[in-house]
Length: 163
Ligand SMILES: [Cu+2]
Image (tube, rainbow, N blue to C red; front, side, top):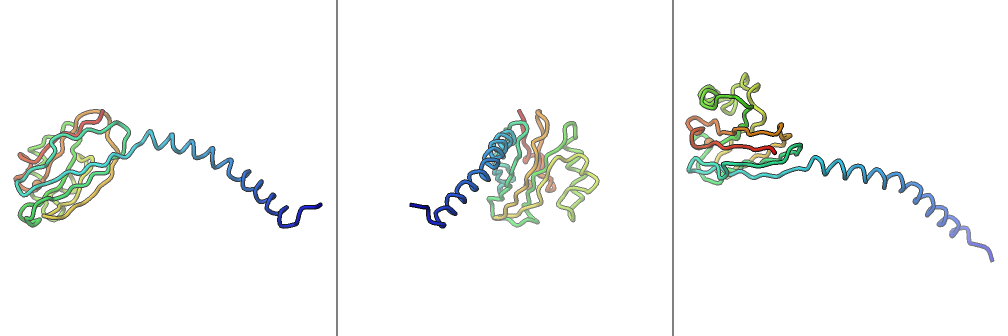
């Protein structure tokens, strides 16, 4: 009794697929170890019609990637009660920064020259809108975030803690 040609072909294909799968299995292991190191943390921050962020403190682990969604939970339009999220570099004077940013209506209330003081920022959102940004967690420490819509920073600010 001899094997039929189709059967031989099947055996051959089976062995080939095993050989091909092996290197990929090893590569997969490496990838999952790397992805564990740089986990993505999803945060939803609300801005309200009462000129408030719903969170005054955000905690993330070092090395993580932050996916931050800023959602305006109110109804007021962007020109009346617009909100953004601006994460400042350490040592930046919040009041000075916000006063200068007030002039920047055309660029979402952050002057282009202020980019050097900013780690990450969103655009402005009005009632019902949301926007999402992704950025790398900065070095361990505490960072200020504010809304730079004119007059909001005193009420709308919080701390991002990287640990
Ligand atoms: Cu605001």
